[in-house]
Structure formats: C-alpha cells, structure tokens
Length: 342
Ligand SMILES: C[N+](C)(C)CCCC[C@H](N)C(=O)O
Ligand SMILES: O=C(O)CCC(=O)C(=O)O
Ligand SMILES: [Fe+2]
Image (tube, rainbow, N blue to C red; front, side, top):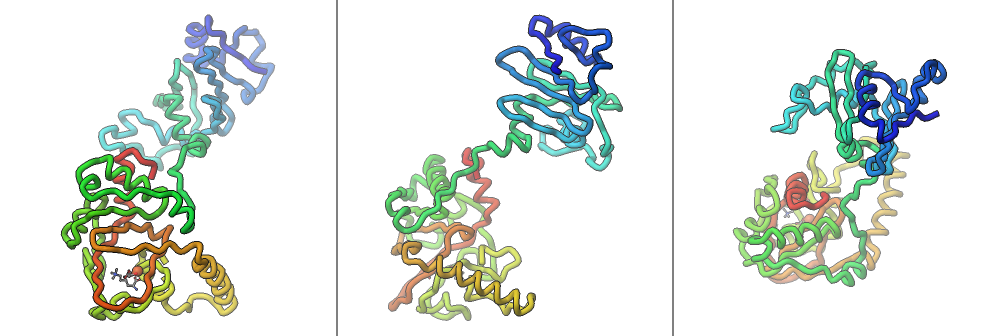
C-alpha cells in the first residue's frame, strides 16, 4: 500500500511530514493502525524528481535516479556534513564515529525538493542532497565509470598505434601530460619521445608526474654493465620478464630472480604454488604476449609494474640506462588532478 503525495498537495503534506507525521494523500482516521511502519513509502510526485523512500526498521531505502539504495542508519549519521560533524575546509570528519549509537534511528525524515532531512533522537539534523547519496551510495558507486584498462598483447598494442607524447608538450602543457597519463592508465605503459638523453632531463620528466621514490638504488639510477652492484641488471645478461624490488615490503611488483627461499608454507602448498607459477610463466612467455621495443637515447618508457613486466635480451657493447621508481599514489593523484579516473 503506498501513501503518495500529490504535487499540488506538496507544500501542506511537506509540513505534515516535517512534524514527523507520515503523510498520505488522503489521511484516513485509522490509516496508521491499518499498516505496519515498514510498508509506508513516501513519494514525490514531481516527474523530474521521481523519488521514493521508505524508513525500514534497520535501514533507510531510497529510490532515485533509477537506483534503489539502502543506507544503514549509523552510516547516515556518520556521514553527516553539518558544521559540527565535518570540516568542509579540510574535507575531514569531525564527528567521533565511535560516539554514534549503533542502534540509532532517525526520529523524523523529510524530503524538501532534492534534500533529505534526518532528525536524530538528540535533535541533531543531518541533511543529504539526493544526488550526493546516489554518488556516494554502495549501489551508485557500482555504476560508476571506472578508469577503463585495455588488456593487450603485442598485436593489440601495435595495432592501437598509441601515440607517444613529445617531451616539450609533456613538460609544458597539461594536455600533453594528460594524454600521456590517459595512455598510461589505459595500457600500463606509455612513451615520451625527444627527451634530452641526460639524467637531469629524465629526472625532470619523472618529477612532472610524481614524487620519485628513493630506494637502495638511489633516487635516480644510472647504470651500465659494470657489475657495480651484485645484481644481474648490472651485467650484459638477458633478463627474463620480471618486475623489480619484489623483496621490498612495498615492492614495485613480484620478480622470479630475486625471490627468496620459500620456507613459510609446507611442501604440499609449495607444490601448488609451483604449479600456479608454471601456469603464469607459460602465459607470460607466450610470444604473442611479448612486445619488444628498442630503447634509444631520448626515448623514455614508463611501466606500471602491476600490469606489465619488463626484461631485456643479452647484449654486447656499451649500454647505459637511467631511470627511477615512481610512487603509485602520486601518479594516481596527478592523473586525478587532471580529471582522469585513476
Ligand atoms: C638497476 N635498477 C635499479 C633499475 C634495478 C635494480 C633491480 C635489481 C633487482 N634484480 C630487482 O629486480 O629488484
Ligand atoms: O637493462 C634493462 O633494459 C632492464 C634492466 C632491469 O630490468 C632492471 O634493471 O631491473
Ligand atoms: Fe628490472
């Protein structure tokens, strides 16, 4: 049974609701006693709004913008954006969540145009804009467009003809940086061309995107096959596909070369691990999943270690590489500041 408000009665009924009276288009003397609380729906009749809500025993249900949302009452109190509950300058919660009664229920709920008002037992009023609730609800979040990721192999990537970004444009224009980051987020790799082949310019490029992560290899690393460090990266040997720093607590990503002794699980789990590792390695080593690119002076390659592994063939002659590790949070932050979904 629905008690619906007709638009021409909106104002009067609104007034009734604000006093906590459950309204009905036609107030019957024994109307309330006929139906338990849980089936009382509230409607707005205006076509544009098309909103319906219901106060259940343990949650609030809202139908709006083609979405059915359900909110826990503690959640509704906890996310209050009133001046006493939320610092709008710093976007931080002032309310002590632990002080909210876990059995809290609103005394009254009323909708005024596009704003819902919840009055709590202590008299505190929390108001929510309907669109804010859609955007921040579990159900609304599920509909959110997430940053697309394009899964690719060598053929798909080659056919995509992803344009590289030029150093000048990358450094001096937001469009250049945004195009680069869009490609990086889509594919997990992206190139910048015509970079002056110096450590300083490479550093400048990296700092345009993010903080540079200092590690045991330094801030900017500049290496060649001089075995200056006890690691095969500092040799002419081939390196199968991998990601670096798997041995860090905050690694760039996993790497078979540097994997420590497996001694934290019993033999039968170890065998299952090797079976899974073999399946992954076979997949990673499929030729169609290998994309070979010749690094040349002036070409900078950025790699998302969670999506793309890197390696090299063995080589002869003199070869010098410089680079650095970037922090994922800062790269994502730069992308978001440019309006990208990261
Ligand atoms: C030379 N450079 C600093 C880039 C890498 C050194 C990484 C060495 C180690 N094998 C690992 O994969 O973490
Ligand atoms: O020499 C290269 O191209 C890559 C070396 C490497 O993977 C590393 O240093 O971690
Ligand atoms: Fe590496």
